[in-house]
Length: 255
Ligand code: MF3
Ligand code: CO
Image (tube, rainbow, N blue to C red; front, side, top):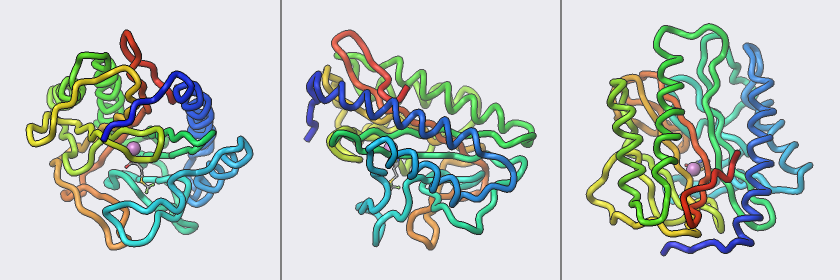
C-alpha cells in the first residue's frame, strides 16, 4: 500500500533531509586514506543525535537478513555494492571508491541518502563510473511528476547506464520512504515488467538509488548477512536521494 504524505509531512521530511545531507557532507570531508569505516559511522551518529534525530539504519530489521543492522551508516568500498558494515579494522586507502549511505528519522519522518566518494587517484574508468551513476540518478529524478510512471524513472536510469556500457544492479531497488525506512512502491533501476507500474501522484515520497557496476549486474550477499558485493568483483557505485512528487514535478528532499 502506498501512503501519501501531506504538506506538513513534506515540511518535516525537508527538515530531516537537510540534516541528512549535512551528515553526508561532514562524513565526506573526513574520508581520507588511513581513516577507519568505524570512525565514519561514529561521526554520522554523533551529528544525527546532536541534531535531535535518530539513525534509522541502526537496529533496522530487514526482511532479507537475520538480526538487525548494527550501525548508523553503511560504508561500501569498491566491489561492495551496498550495506557494508563499518568496522574498527577496516581502513580506507588511496584509490578506493567509498559508498556512504545513511538513513535518518527526524520528527517521526524518514529520509534516506547515499553518495560515492573517490579517494585520491583512482584506476582509469572509475571516475566515469561514479559520474555516470550520479547522472543516472538525476535523469531518473527528472522523470518524477504526477502522471508519469515508475517505469519512466527506471528507463531513464537504465538507458543512461547502458549507454556508457556499465550494468545496473537488478537484485536491489529503490523504494517508498517517509513514514518508515522502506515502504511501497519498489523503484527498480531497470524496466521490470513483473512489477505493477504505478502512476506517480503528488504526495508520494520515494528513494531513488541506482547501483551501477563496471562488470556484470549479478551480486552476492556476504556471510555477514548484509554486505552486498558484485559477483565478478568488479567495482560498483551508488547514489540515492529521497524525492517527493509535487503537483508540478518533484522536490529533492535530501538536498
Ligand atoms: N538505503 C538502504 C536501502 O534502502 C538502507 C540500508 S538498510 C539498513 O537499501 F539495514 F542498512 F539499514
Ligand atoms: Co534506500
